[in-house]
Length: 233
Image (cartoon, rainbow, N blue to C red; front, side):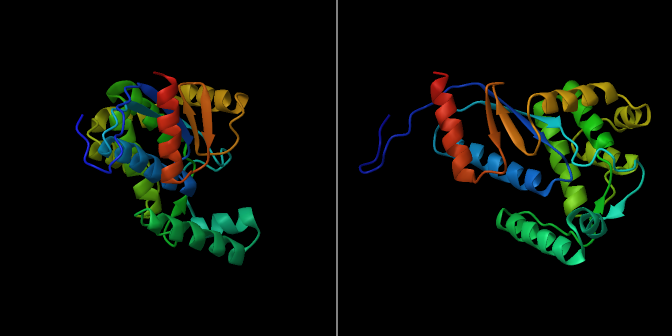
């Protein structure tokens, strides 16, 4: 490979890598982490690395006790959880500013906190029926609905809308939601995650061997992916 003078050659790395991301659709750091991780993969490919990454999203619930079918303004929910309105507002302002740096718009003044179980069931269906790429688009759509558009992501109609925008069949998505399909699969995955020591999200599990906790910076994700890909050669 010809390399311009003064430019370091970047080796090709062919390393099929499965990244299982445990996250919740109402977790701000999960959305921020998604943007950073996606950018890291894109950056490596733009640099000429042949890196094959399969990303799948697995469920985690920040608040499994949240009532189903009830949406609460996020500021109210955070006030109860973090000890008052002032502290809650400070937390929301902080994550909103960080998200903006990643090109994500958080409109937390209109966000509605709700139980996320239905979202996870639909994401499980997307992976099973359509594969990782469609699941990733659905994940993005649901997070955008919650963080940016102020929609109730526990609503079946909102979730079906997100599914259709991801290229999924509306009737099948509706059936998954109304008939409580994938409930046991999601419960088993959440239980398994807890049993394997995952107590916070996002957590990135690579090839079932390495765990990377938290919404790391894009540069850190790049270093981790290159290092682990090299180990597989």
